[in-house]
Amino acid sequence: MSPRRARRRESSRPLGFPTGLDTVEEWPDGEWKVRILTGASSTKDYRCPGCDQEIRGGRPHLVAWPNWPGGDEERRHWHQTCWRKRLDRGPGRSRY
Image (cartoon, rainbow, N blue to C red; front, top):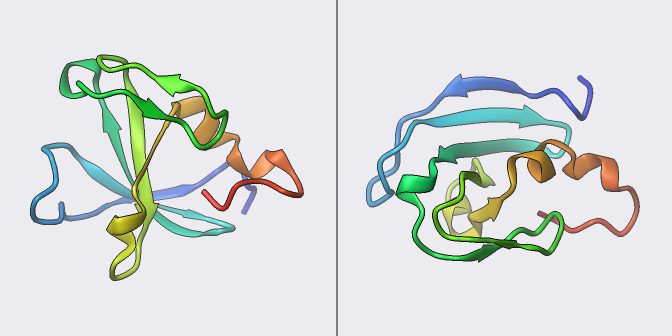
């Protein structure tokens, strides 16, 4: 499977998470739960681990976390483009 392409499947939403449709994506670096957020559902500012730039509140983006027990503790907010290209960064790239 190419690093740029992920397989998706629907997943049930964990308790206590904001409303949104979660999908599971299988990538070479593992299986990830991903939730797309609209600007309307996003009120806080976050820092994208892919580009280290701010994601302003009210801007569409996604949240991703490893799909294993306790993986929700590692949720990160990403620009959609940064998430899709995260494996293209090469050596020294962030774990997320």
